[in-house]
Length: 257
Image (cartoon, rainbow, N blue to C red):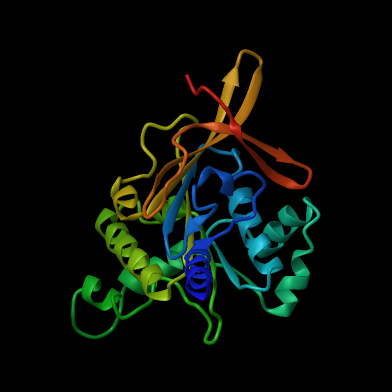
């Protein structure tokens, strides 16, 4: 009996529950494998940031830590966007469970690949600088990067630098043991899920959020396209953005054609 209880506990500890209404039901294990790095892909305004912010809120509500790194929006706008859903997010910032960082992607790229004193190539020197900064003694259960699209926009003339940064970023997440969500902008009905394709190769998972037009009505839908180390539903299902946040209907399929 004790051995069986230990096995059940071990399985639970390997799973991250998002606690987004209906989403975890898409997994046989009722959640995402801990430590996975996941792309959250979709067109403009489909709810990618809301999805990730809701996961952060649910995580900190359970006493765990989350770090949200924004390359675009200000901290004030992020807080306001979360308060709209009735989430008392300032409480968790004050308690130290939620850390929101606003980072200029140009600053990161200059620091890692720009004019650095000393010998060695820019690529060699960039390995000495972490792709993100986590404060000492802050151990995030979840890290969100919003968004990779902003990084590639900043490095549009330096494709090699972006690829190096990506490889270091995914390695960094693996070292931390955190479950990471990386937002990436695509077409409304994408046939590719990242700017270069290397993101899809490096990521453990891809979650796609759609905005689908049917006659005069638009519907949001969500799909787990890929998720290593899990058994998940292979279908596109209805997703709604309600007054209280995102709600997924795991038994209501949606056609994207």
